[in-house]
Amino acid sequence: MDSRPATCTSFDSLFQHSGFEVPITLHAKVTVDADQYRIRGKSRIETKPTGDISFDFSSSVFFGAHREDFFFSIVADTLRILDRERGQYYESADAARYLEEILGMDFDAKTVMLIALGRTPSCDEIESLRREARANGEVRFVGEVTGQPFEVVFGAKHRRLKEISWPLRREKRRDQVRVTYQWTKGNDAGFTLRQVVIRLLEREWRCKITAVTK
Image 1 (tube, rainbow, N blue to C red):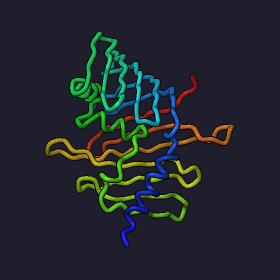
Image 2: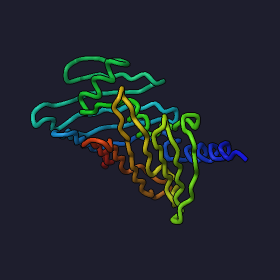
Image 3: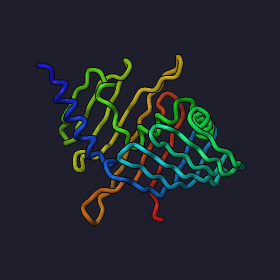
Image 4: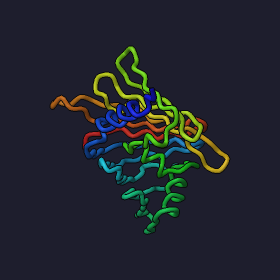
C-alpha cells in the first residue's frame, strides 16, 4: 500500500502548526558571516502565513566602513528592494542580484529566505518522503529534492519547526541550506520565535537572526 498520501498529509499538517501559520514580527539583531567579511546590524522582520516576507535592515558595520540601509519584501513571489543608502530601487532578477551581493551569497537568496522564514515546501517537490518518530518525541521527515537530500524536523514539546535542510543549485554548483530555529515559551503558554540561524553547508556563510526587546 502506498503510504505517500498519508505521509504528505502528516507533513502538511505539521507545517500548518509550524509556528509560521500566524503572522510574526521580529525585532532582531542580525550577523552575516560570509568568507572574509561580516555584516552586523538590526532588523525588523515580518512574515505572513501566505509566505510573504518583509525585512527592514540597517547595518552598524560592513567591511568596517560602509553602512547598509535597505528594505526588501517578497510579496506574491515578487522580490523588491529599496536601497535607502544609495536611493536605488530593484525588482525581480535585479533585486535578487543585489541581495546576493550585499549578503555575500552566491545562491538564490530569495529561495533561501523563503525557506528560512516559513514557506511550506510542496510535497510534490519531494521524492521518497518518509516520516520518522524519534525516541525524544521529535518528528523527522526525509526525502529528496531534485535528487538531493531533504530534511525537516519538528520539535518534541511544541511541534514547531526546529530544523530544515534544503538543496540549492545554480548552474553546476550545488549547496545545502540548513536552518535551525529556537522558540521560547511565553506567559500565555504560547511560543515565540527567538532565533533563526541560516547556513550554507558547503561554504563559509552564516546568517544569525536573534530577537531583541524593542
